[in-house]
Image 1: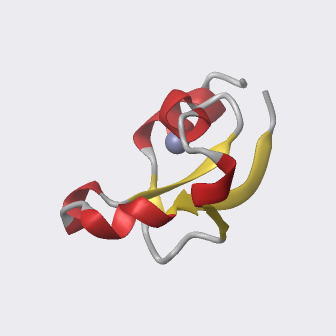
Image 2: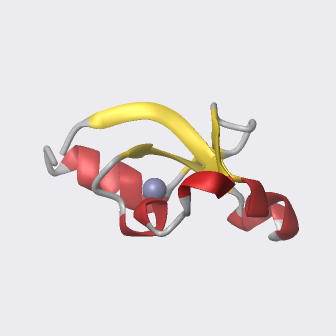
Length: 60
Ligand SMILES: [Zn+2]
């Protein structure tokens, strides 16, 4: 699955800052769980999600 434009959930703001992430891989399970109406384009200045990194590293 491809790397996509970065996006994040509007609910990230409710998480502890250490858990706030953005996503950039369409195969990322937690990224897929974000409903379309809760997605925002961009990184939100959050770090990249661990699952996204793994998916990208594996060439997915
Ligand atoms: Zn992710």
